[in-house]
Image (tube, rainbow, N blue to C red; front, side):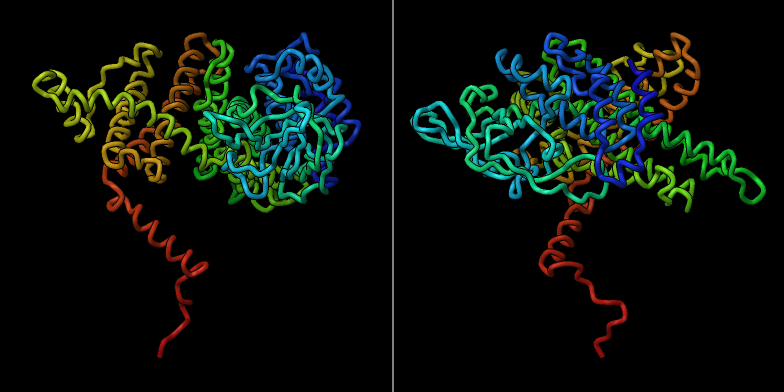
Length: 551
């Protein structure tokens, strides 16, 4: 079904017009609905297409060509109706999903508030149970809600009072709210930097009556549901970003071939070649990770790929922002003009590092999830080390391994090269090296900071970046090995690209482990903190002007 969608986007979607008018036309919306794009992952029994994660990611490569359309569709199904899909009961699914699948009803996800951005647990919107116990009255405001002005169905998160262990507590609960319930209003569309075709606005609830049967899941389980919704959709950012970049690379390639400067085409200059190669490596890694994660989701029942999806989101969002800028740079002043899509896609891509969890928060999530698991494993290690007479072989082995790690020469024992084509042997060893160095870095970090590791965000960022490089290298190498073994076109290029990516990733891992090993004073973390504290104390940039004199 990709072909008709590609044909429609190529022939009928005027992204420049959508960007200027700040609205997707009714005719385009009508065709999007007819193509089934509002029900991609809704099961067939509820009127949707029932696409797998892999199929959904593939469609995302096409729909991402227009940022406004991509966000409208994602806000509807990746988060807007996802709560009903993953936590709703059968009655709720039968009642709401059929019309959401056809696009007759559009969904929105209402979580963010003026006082709660990344800290979702601090929301102030409240739902109060009526005296008869049949209805909740919803009061509060949500901001920056995609589809907020056009949605018929809202997944809303609000504080409710529940009793736990003879104590009344405030817990977040998820509700299905229909606009026709009453008391639902929205503000004017926000004037945004990018994705201007999507509708983003404030949504207000004033004594909105919500039937008790419209609770999603259990009362008080809303925070967990919200996190599960957000975790489940991030993986597709890799494929959608790759689709967008491949389109821009095609335009930039044509320009580099045909544009002559200093009596030769741009394509012959090494600095231009470097830009194309770096962007190609990022595209390859993005789509490799995205489809690897999609495959994991499709091959396992109730697969938990929250960390993998977060990795894809962080890597891809930053890769897209960098790559669009580089492609624009190749075109020079021409790329800066609105007649070409580069400046629009640059504006559109900036939001990727912010929504669905900021990259800063997701880096903390990636690293702390790993540290949480490692902490449990290390507890047993510490117990044995504290009793060396009962565990002499273990203590000797640990001491020998630690010595090798301190010399940056860990023993390779995983035999990862046995799982890849023989010509990737060196890259397999690099990947194994990075994996063992990650283990060492986590041990060092936990030894240095213990339970206070959650406050050492610069250390956690380095751990997250190591994990991201390892996952990206794994995805690239496994894909390239497969492509070469089955004889895909240009598989020799895939081998070369995966080797280069893994080499560069290994250099980044080396540096990050070194900084963790050195500690905060040698790594200059303390300097960063001191300078930032001085900026906050002075209310901004705090150094004297270079022309100022004191005599």
